[in-house]
Figure 1 (cartoon, chains in turn blue, purple):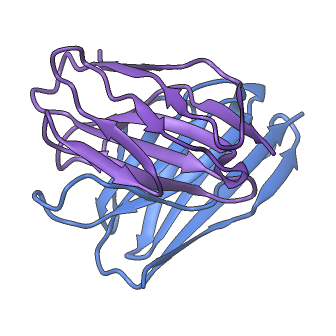
Figure 2 (spheres, rainbow over the protein chains, first blue to last red):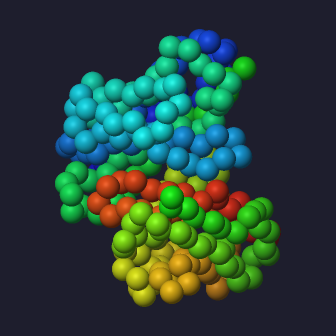
Length: 115
Length: 114
């Protein structure tokens, strides 16, 4: 069975400090990977997606970046946090291929508070 | 752009009562959208509750059901008799087929009183 793990579960960080959130998927080869974000009181929105190792597409500009260093790993980061980065970050995977449907399977999320 | 509007919460119902959470969508860039209900139980991650990919079809899971109505652009979530364990946040979502792109509603917080 596939499992998805996100880390850290929660963080409190200072404005201007760096951030790194991670996501690992086990039990699935070459998954499509996604980062979603929900600001406090806001709507879940897609930030990035990746079809393959080393390739990441940005959907929304939030002064964040993402990388996929390994097939099963997806990293979200920034060198300088803003207050507006606070919220809930969700990693998700989907079966690869153009005709595999678009059901996303989400991790448990990372809650970020920027102070 | 595409958008999803759902019942604004919080919603509180008593156990064994019926429930409906409304969801309407606007799919301006997607000819044949897929529709989803996701749920987040306290302390858990976001998980798929049900999905329907064809207009006119009904999806069901855990006693919940929703019908994809293209005429009214709606995908309301219903349950005949809720349980306390149904307390959670429910999200309606619109999906562009085979892309992984989902447009979510704002979520509806449901509390079921014993």
